[in-house]
Image (tube, rainbow, N blue to C red; front, top):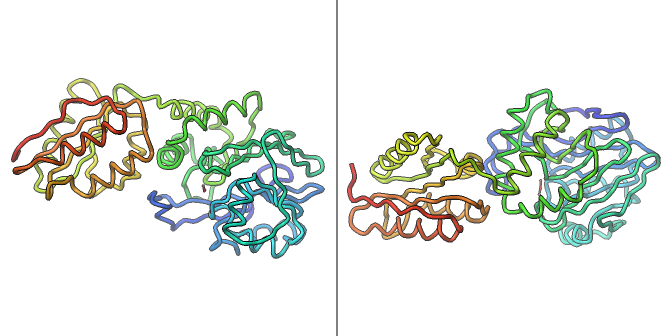
Length: 371
Ligand code: FEO
């Protein structure tokens, strides 16, 4: 995809990855984008780069606008290789460019690339002046890595938010208003559930640092540039960061050997439905754990079922529980259930794991040879 002008003197010059289906454990059925932004000012500035396999796309897009050797400043908001992966190529072409990053950003970039680049270390409240524009630095540690920062372009009220407010969504559109709010929210929710969820406290801290700043555009490092959905996304991030859940929503997740635990899952679903609670049921042999995480983002009830195999829970259930526990949803009510032939240990282990997530627990449901 070619460069896209998103404001006077500001261009999206990133890459669209239509084919990626796995992003460090997170399934990405809709692909993603690696967003980089070029700012034309007295000092020509590039904000972030793209995954290394797309370096040629980044260079082509920049070259449509300016000679890449003319880049004066590179602002690296985050060291993870989907954003820093083309620094080697950019800084080989523009070797005198200043590279702005946080202290931990410098440490990470040196560890990844072993280069003595022209590092300029910045912290919250520092500014980067490019001529007519001023970028205010806002460090956002653990949203979602220790090194993360955002930059706020004061004169245009634009926030370059890096991973925050991102969506794993590949398309030829670059703006939220081109695809509609419901799609943007769905992709943003999946992204938050699988990447940002453990860091609610840090998201709320970042919100405090953004307090009082008008936002006309949010330019994240993945997915669509946000304009018409800004207020909705900010409200949703606040809800998600506070683990606000819907008391009328339940998610049931299970794996089954011969179908008995599946039968229990659907009986439990009917019970919820009879109480007016909207319920979704997921079979872990057919639904990836990252899709389940998106589905349970706003659900009060999380019910997990497993048959017993060799005195353990089924491996798909263990994988799901490990993944969910790491992402640390809070303020939930849990239920363990399952059928068994003779031991029934799986129900105990599922129950213990849900308890260890600090969920309020319902009494487990354990049935022998339910058919
Ligand atoms: Fe999009 Fe933390 O990388």
